[in-house]
Length: 255
Image 1 (cartoon, helix red, strand yellow):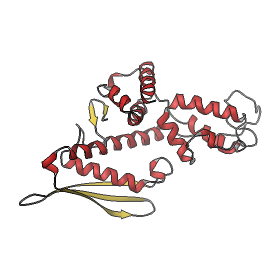
Image 2 (cartoon, rainbow, N blue to C red):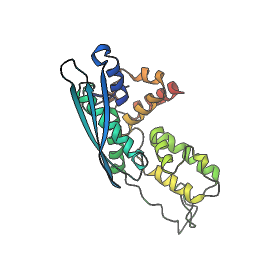
Image 3 (cartoon, rainbow, N blue to C red):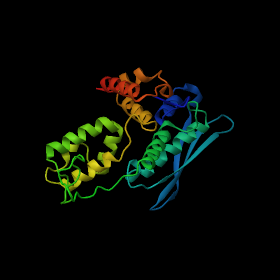
Image 4 (cartoon, one colour):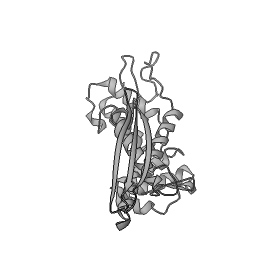
């Protein structure tokens, strides 16, 4: 579903493709091609071209995108694919297949992710010197690993998931090549500590930049959740309590 933010509507690239295909005869004869303009170890640039075959002349619409290879998130492993998606979205927008905004919901989500990363700078967990059993949450011991037991680690992960939301939670686990927290080995306290430190550095799910990202993620998992949120204006849901209530309803709808 489109993301509504600050009174504007952002469609995903997939929704723009569906809009293109729904036009029948208007878009019956078309081609959509992508070309790599530049690709190196640091970034890539891709050009997408949407062409409609006409009786007398063809119509061409282009879109360009640039993505840097990152250390986390989708651009850690798939910056080329992400770049191609953005370029396709912009070519479709040039042809008029978009919501109220030229940028796609996919680009908005990525921008929100990047803003969140800049807003919350991860802090390095330091070994506890004076009191290894202090009430700091049990992130790291003097040996450099998580000082709680394995059950405590999983319990902390569960509580952090509630605090930061599923989208950030899943994205963080993927940085460690994990799908679930219980895939971390029981004796690997170093990884347990780094996972928890990464969670602790993130903004809460009710934060202005994270809330629409979480709504979009939950709606992408379920048509029922998407239908529930279809007519909502996220700008009018401002308090942490109201945002939390909405996310709870979307979680129930998506399960």
